[in-house]
Length: 158
Image 1 (cartoon, rainbow, N blue to C red):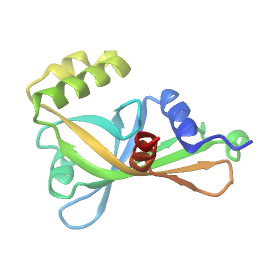
Image 2: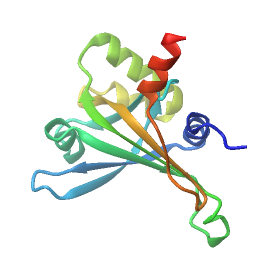
Image 3: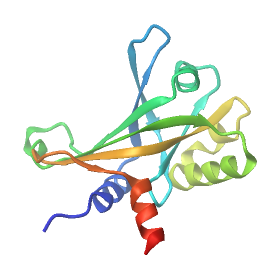
Image 4: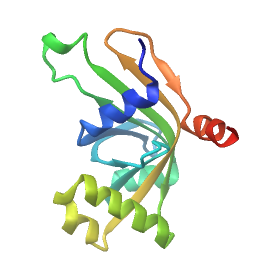
């Protein structure tokens, strides 16, 4: 029985403490960054935090189309074929509305209690990546695509 992509993503994200953020820099070259994260329960948004005026901050503000990668393999050949990989594509937005900042701050602290001082610093900015699509691969299987917004709209029509 194939598990729903949403269940696979939720399980994978619960097991991970970092994600790889992929952005594009000013010259058009790809740039990757290892980031702590927190995801909203519906998996429609992923929160990130970074110091203001870093390359990550500049890239997400000027070119908000980003992707995020999670992979539960350990780097050993023994689990190479059994791993789960998820990618999220979407648009990054710096959070300025107080209710959005409060939600992101609470989610980040819940998942990353070691980041209390970093998240409280005035030099830290919170971003939300509004996920338009998830891609999920288990083992060597095919990539399954999942649109969390379409699922939300479908549930609201029921």
